[in-house]
Amino acid sequence: MSAPTTDRRADAAAQPIRKQRERVFSGIKPTGTPTLGNYIGAIRHWAAEQDIYDNIFCVVDLHAITVSIEPRELRQNTRELAALLVACGIDPARSALFIQSHMPEHAELAWILDCVTPTGWLNRMTQFKAKAGEDREAASAGLYTYPVLMAADILIYQTDAVPVGEDQKQHVELTRDIASSFNHRFGETFVEPRPIIRAVGARIMALDDPTKKMSKSEAEGSYISLLDPPAAIRKKIARATTDSERTIVFDENRPGIFNLLTIYQALGGGETPEQIEAEFAGKGYKEFKAALAQRVVATLEPIQRRYAELTADPATLDALLAEGAARVRPLAQRTVHTVKERVGLL
Ligand code: TYM
Image (cartoon, rainbow, N blue to C red; front, side, top):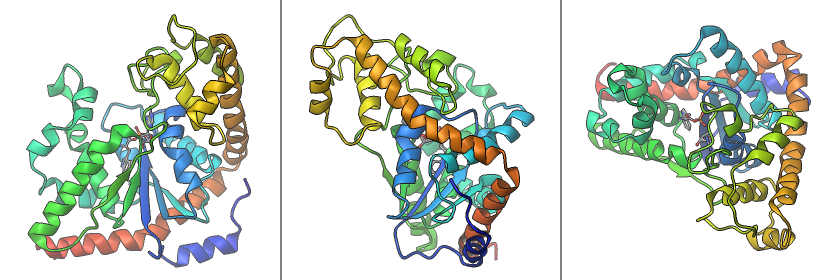
């Protein structure tokens, strides 16, 4: 991927993004190398639809510190993730890409929204329950109010739509509720955003346990990372849990093979389930898994190549992130100013 020219960057920085199209905002946490689940459920759609929307994408480092993370690891993950997003096709000329903590307005708005969000709404968040685990008392207050910071990320840009995987649906719905209740109490201030969740691949499951979501916080063999070398990808797929049946069909009651077929379909060129089933009719799991591994390797290989180029030039990456923040800053500042007026802080 070629870096944007200096002139183009200067132009982009000079103007806030104008809203002639619907605005899309989405974010991703720098808690480890993103997985194939992140790519299929979210990133590939962000990249593919950049000409349809006004795009804002964010590496949400403030969300990453809601759980314990080594400072050095966070610093490294944040830059790695930004580079990976560009390598996946997020084009800085068409999308604003930046680091959440570079825009302090997100945290400022989050505090105000914290003060108008009933704790009862937060108590219903299933992700908090899952992440806090057994010892809920020990979970950070940040983990508890995590969805409100996410609402601030979205609402600060007057976002129309939020492309996410299935697991973020509840958070986007909460965001709508917060927007609607704020508007009701203080007057029209926020756009009420809708989630965009795809029919195929919105919930990619773990390879070793297809009843659980694929996640970078689980065991190594359970996920494919976007930086896994081909040999690791082949090995993980070869070991993926299936079942003792023989047919290769999209049957939701057979979660292992269903998940692998979903990955195959999502990374393909638009084949229908029927076409894929026909392709593997009479063939065994081994053959299917080899074809799947080949498809995953072919998808990730160019991404990994671009990633290597980008990380070899950290100054260009830094400049591009600074430019992304500069483009969206006027928008964020405008919203925060209005919100402060509405609640009586100005
Ligand atoms: P995060 O970092 O966990 O995941 C980033 C995106 O990847 C999707 N995803 C998946 N999709 C399909 N299958 C999977 N196994 C899978 N795992 C993850 C997620 O749904 C998400 O779209 N809270 C968010 C980050 C965030 C955010 C925001 C998102 C912060 N502020 C504002 C949208 C808008 C999160 O933890 O995503």
